[in-house]
Length: 265
Image (tube, rainbow, N blue to C red; front, side, top):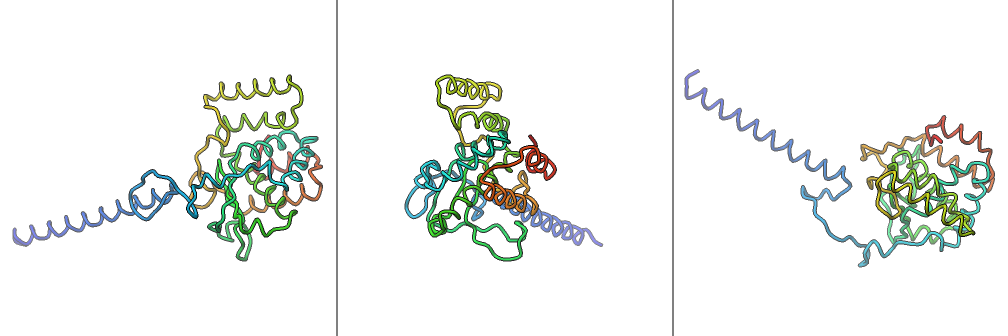
């Protein structure tokens, strides 16, 4: 091969390498944006307010305690606390410290195979480590019992996600049950002192809702990996607590949760 031909070959190879490298960089950028839960319409992430139907997303936040159907769920949590206060504490913590939203929109569905069923389902709610989103249109069409069941399901999903929360959130959950029925000033003072100790020990700042990364529990998240068995176990626990109104054998349920990898107390 003469010098001129060799030079042309080198230039061709260099162009191919540059082209390939450029494609790889673009692909990785798109993946990072997508995996972060942000818009994947471009390679740039920017701040700004988000809304729905002309209203800020924050406007759709609801007080779970003001929901009429929550009284049934509260009774279940209280009854669970008689024999399994650790679980009741987690449940009450999720109910009170997560931010609940009722939005007039459908939600992106989790693939059926991910939740262990062989048919298409309605996505009634979705949650991450700090927020719970409910499809208001479907929720409004439900019976009272079904609404309570959905709230219970989301609370127990939140309990399963406690394994992915930070130490501050776990500490607050561990003292949550004592705040459920405070009546005396002494009880209130003790709870406030225990809560302050959680923040002191874990270096957190005030406020509820969990300090973890807001990652949706789906296959795209590298940090949260829920299996088909997890979804099946949540459904099983919802049925058990609903049918017994929260009256459980604390020892048996604690061992079951440990064996299933659901929550280890």
